[in-house]
Length: 138
Ligand SMILES: [Zn+2]
Ligand SMILES: [Zn+2]
Image 1 (cartoon, rainbow, N blue to C red):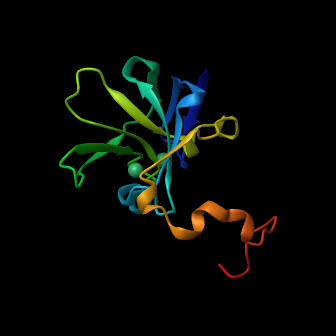
Image 2: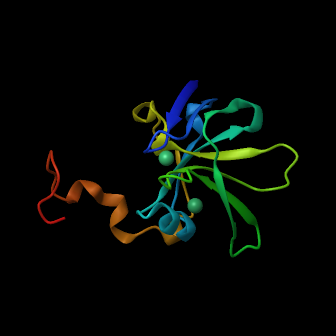
Image 3: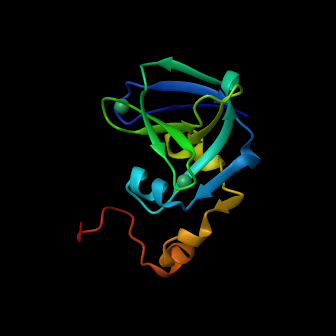
């Protein structure tokens, strides 16, 4: 499936070919902190299937608890996370951040990783009251 995406400010634009059955939720604590929210949503994409059309990504290398280094790429202007990969691999495999993909409403996750660190309430969003617009309590 061909997809395209951009960061919040428009500095970064990309296109990629992805397998829509490879969409995953990641509940790891690094995803929680780096996204500033409850969990990450990623879809796997290999090197040649990702094309940066515009802009230059900034990279932050984070050493995970396992010792693995993850290269986290984001827009240097607005901070939107674009993808993560393991540096040095011969064949690069990116975890592309699904929230930046224009077709994201068609990409339903099929698996949840690191569920041991998932926030307690996250599995039952239906129990939280819904409003169409911004909550007045923000
Ligand atoms: Zn940006
Ligand atoms: Zn994660």
